[in-house]
Length: 200
Image (tube, rainbow, N blue to C red; front, side, top):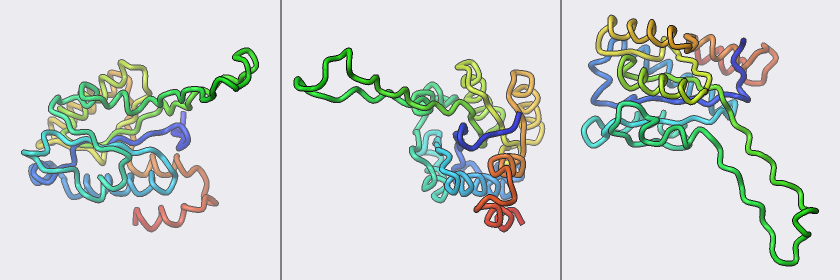
């Protein structure tokens, strides 16, 4: 099964300035997060961000925050506990009308909102906030794809343990380039050359 940009949402977890200097391979991880955010903007993939206690760890990295539809402030390690799941599921629009509208039996039902059920997750720390968020999203029956080269922890061992657990729980483990080429699908895509320039 390939990733489909039209069915995907991107979630960027806790790329915050006071946390990043302690993260293993932080520069590479941040660069890949920025690539994902840029590609999501080009392809109209909804992007969401989270901040863990920003009064202590600072806000989400500014260019990532700018790519997000919303940045959720959280104190729980799982973003689901602070409302991420609600953001990811579209709300149905009420049927509008007034007393002079057609009788109810002649009215068309409002179209069901389109739900993008594939979640592409990246962030830090892989073994804490990213892991707990991903596990709870899996419990809510989302398809969860974790971008391994855009995730990390303070130690390599904690990061790798998170990947092992996520794979065992049913998350798909991918890389930034895998996401990009699967979202694009074709070298004739209008953003293919932009993507090539971004990953070089």
